[in-house]
Length: 353
Image 1 (cartoon, helix red, strand yellow):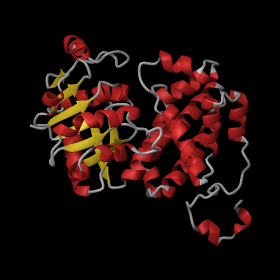
Image 2 (image 1 turned 180 degrees about the horizontal axis):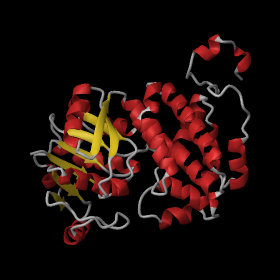
Image 3 (image 1 turned 45 degrees about the vertical axis):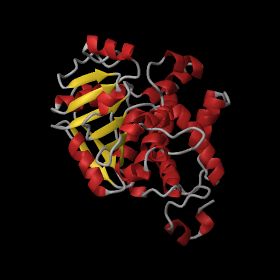
């Protein structure tokens, strides 16, 4: 019987625990404090807003790391991106060469601008780095808890490791595909949250489906441009962790980032919105990181730049939204220092600004 430890009692961490335990996997969910662990053990069900789904018998909760990781084949980090480094440090003495380390966070670290797999690699032994995996895809917790079908991607630099993780994580209603493009899978999961903030704003302003479709499509191109610049395979962004996750996050009212955008359009302050939420909207911190990356790399990322001004410079929302839809147009695959499709250059520079 498989044993998996899940670090963190976030919505996604708890959801993964319930899904895997339903499938017969022995899951130990680690809570940071004994008080939190006791509360979850007594409730025996998921907390709000996760519809209070009953915990399966094979899901247990503990505040002891050694207990959680005992005999575990894999440890899943189901914590917000900004706490991945801190939580990885706690795991170091409990890891071994056979244990997979899976990041389920969709964000980038503020300050270092690093992806989650890079943060984990910073903190663990070089002997264990080949076991790092990343999990990403169109995975809305509430739907998965309600046993609706979903698909996701697990990536590792070594395909054999990715397949090992796939075997551990696949259930009848949670289909796990594999990939070796760790960079692309991580960036897809992180960058789509920025676009989802914009989609929420568009919905909040009643801009309509045409405008949102344009924003999503242009957003995907912007995501791919940064991904290619950082070494990702552009085709990855056409897959589940790119386009798939982008559609789900931009279209669903269950998306936290979409919710933030809608609430901003209502005139609420960012601080007020965040303080009222029980879960983290990763797009807020990711926007800051990507804005910094774009400036350092000289990349043109107009959607990210606009969302940054709304979040961090208190830009007028209506003016910013208008700018998004009326930005100076050139070839739709062209942008400053984008290296998306080399054939554009070969067809002549007259059509590309």
